Each structure stands twice: as C-alpha cells, then as structure tokens.
Image (cartoon, rainbow, N blue to C red; front, side):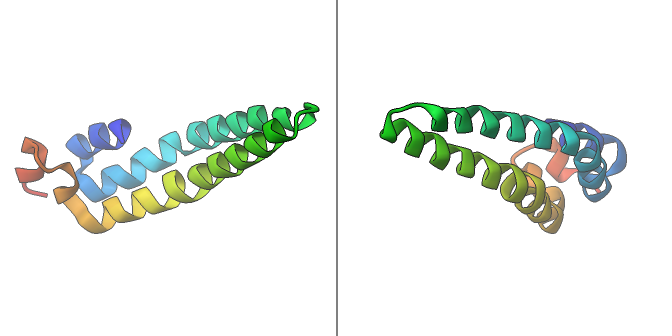
Length: 95
C-alpha cells in the first residue's frame, strides 16, 4: 500500500491504485509463493504435527497472496476511493 500511496499522490487515488498494483504485483506474488514453498518443506519431516502446521500455513499464505493482497485489498481500496487514506491530508485533497 505504500507504493499505491506514492502513486496516488502523483496520479490520484484510483489511477494510483492501478499503477501500484501493476508495479508491485509480481513482487508480492513471488514472495508469497516462496514463503508458501518454505512452509511446505515442513511436510517432509517425520513429525505429523509439523506436517499439518506446514501445510496449513502454506495454504494460508497462498490464500493471502492470491486472494487478499492481489484482489480483495486493491478492489476495496478502488471502491472506497480517496477516503482509503483517512485520517490524512491525502484524503482531503481533491481527486
């Protein structure tokens, strides 16, 4: 959201959200996939509870990466518009 905020100052809120998402989307997705793969490595351990924890956390990270951070948060921010930055001076600036 920091990159989106930087772009929103230059372009306006809604174009800034779109620009910020296109610029940071690959980085967010890559980091999420790497983190999920790291937790899936726990699945090769002989302890059952570590396998379960690793699998559950990996699924949670993938859901967060692909649904929450890549889809839900930008969509809500786009719908809310400039009020997403409240309380801030940026929320009071004209669009």
